[in-house]
Image 1 (tube, rainbow, N blue to C red):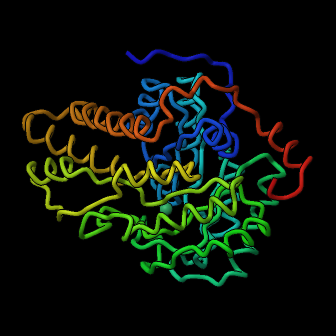
Image 2: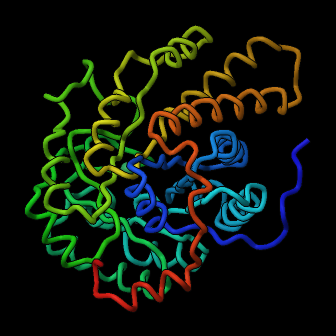
Length: 348
Ligand SMILES: [Zn+2]
């Protein structure tokens, strides 16, 4: 039985605070995508088990799938059930300022304004457009204590219909100007990773991933937290299990955990992981459906799926070093964060 947690309202944490603490502790924090209750429970169970702070992120597709009210109340339920865990609710790939403002109204404590693409979510934008929309969101968000992630450069691949499919690596000098002009708390950098399951046709190494860019940007912007998108590792054993249970996935390579850990040593603080959770759930569902052909209680299938989600997320929390850090600090409220932004110039 799942026990009811404290009913006292527990403030959701902000990305800014959680990543500041991660920088202090020298670790990265996984940002895991959520669309439904079982995914969220798997993520939060993993955070409780490993005693880790966690970023739960929802895309526009997730909000459309679950419905904004369901999503909001699921997160509130999660934070009440795990009151000791710093939990950030983050909007993944906001396509335009209005979407970010809507998320803030809904109670998101962090939003990504992805101005690297135009509002169609496909066409790469120009730099001035990116600065303008990102700054607009940062001003509105910071007034309410909400954190902001921007993106400079574009990733390969398409995620929930979002992405140009073109790769433009982040320019370090432009990153400095972008952070100065927009005041973002975190910056998604393009270093050659892609969204989706099919990232690389061969095992990526320092030649494929532009790790030197991370080091260079960190040297120029030591106070800005870097974000790695498309950072699922795509474990071959999960792909094999899916295919053994009737799936048809092509063999592919994700981002090796060691590459992510190298990024974390050079200022990467938020690591986006979506595909690994999808693979784990699909593997467990296919196996459970095959193993129990006469079963028709969906719980028989969702239970192992939830457990599989928890397992892969807990593994990442250990990999990224966030395990054991949930109790390091008290969560600051949005009001406290707003006061902090008001007392300091943009970007500080
Ligand atoms: Zn992304």
